[in-house]
Length: 500
Image (cartoon, rainbow, N blue to C red; front, side):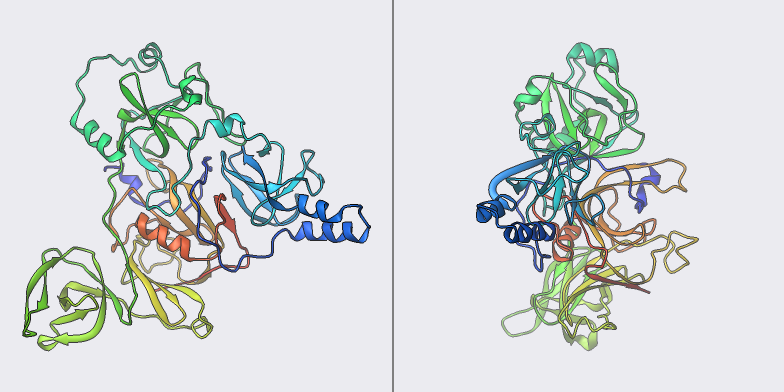
């Protein structure tokens, strides 16, 4: 997969957010804050006032009776209390459908009413949310991100010229008028490769079969609008696709901004093989940093004999035992690997008492380009990362990653990130997976536009492979509830320590 040169650096600045629906069920979130604090005050007042049926009223103000609401905005915020000035707990993406209370908890500043939602907080019904589950935004969003999967969407990068953004599945006449495309052309080899990477197209839903124009969620920008399209995508754009459809001998992808793009004007992202290692035994994580590394294994007599090859960047857990004067080190899998081929983690020190309390924390070494996640004093996961190109320089004047102690304060299943402002060509990176902001615009996040993990590469953020970013996203706090696209915690979630 090739991107323009400017796309090779991670973009740490948050961009305009596209919509999308969170679909997959999640594991139960630990240590959830109390639900519906504003509703609790209202319920207490009702009881004190001697309502005729307080129990029924109380139940109507809590989610869990089967009632639902739908997000119809790019960001439908969830508030801590039923009022605009309350703290924001997170947001939903357009098309998301979640449980709500049967009755509103008031309408202050919200004529449609504030509804308590699962598992906590309140949503205002109006421009951002609807009680109509057949709303056109929901109908136009057949699926959401595959939460927990390395790639929550299928990703493509625009070719030159970039694709047009169609407002409905275009007829052949519309395609000829817009693109000047002629039929009967042979399918190029790269298109066949992309078809294989993207998998089978989905069947047309009734909405798309009707060829109705796609709606734009509230808050979405629509700078130009022609009868069949909304102009071209920006140069060097990258997209996450909700679905793909076979149509008129071509394939079209539905972007998370609810546009349709012709797949043959893009290149599919080739997934990386990079995976971190879960540490399930006592030991030290390490990664193979050379190609052609031969492992040894003991035979029946205990003598070490050549065995399989150790894949490049594969992760291992070292037991501490050595052989051949330290030339080989033992792994918990029973294989012995040349010590000279390994990059070994330097296990971190607990400066904050987190380990003593058994809490989670993350250690990131810029020199090693390695991340280690801890539960108390025990490392539980490690992987290679790509930090800022400025290495250990001043992050205020270079693209270095900021050093210090921080806390994860907001998490997004996916988010849009703009390209490096200093590059000659802007980059529009849609649906960057598993973004966790810990300081200003610095974040931990997955990347799909490079595969240089273990080397400095970014504009300051901490880049992870999508699989590693997915693992870390579910492990850290604050948890993102089922159906939500983001969660905020200004007081701070999991500790992140970044150092040389």
